[in-house]
Image (cartoon, rainbow, N blue to C red; front, top):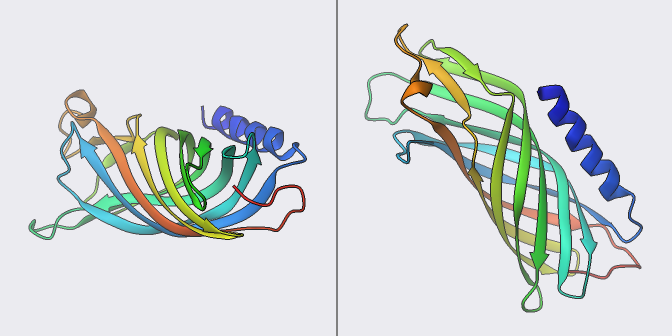
Length: 201
């Protein structure tokens, strides 16, 4: 499954990069990630980084397609109120595919699906028997403000698929009664390389 996801991500990037009007850029920022268990959030968020390359392809004056390829850290940690410490550190390779609409000059809102492939995982603290899924599918909403080629953005990533299965103290796997899904807030900045064919979003 992981190989299929990687092939899909590479195909999307290859097709996107073939359009002559595509405008390239870089994006980086901070993640705040937590995990919802059946709707509740019993953990504290983990702060991490994300970064990568992005592409914007105009469709009309105020509408464009956006995609990219990003390394993104996710995870969570136990709250300070408990007597033990456990930190989940996951790193993904993510490709969002969004439609962006700019209702007024310099502002834009974008939304769409995101496919992520797990690259690495690390658990600190308590020992778990774990089976982390090799991929994650989410839905994202992005608000951005751009002046010429520089902009800032606030993004929410709502995980749709279960992230991992855990067996704690040799008891029944939690996936039979609990569903772990990620909730990620991102704040970052981006820079679009100048292009004569496309002056901005």
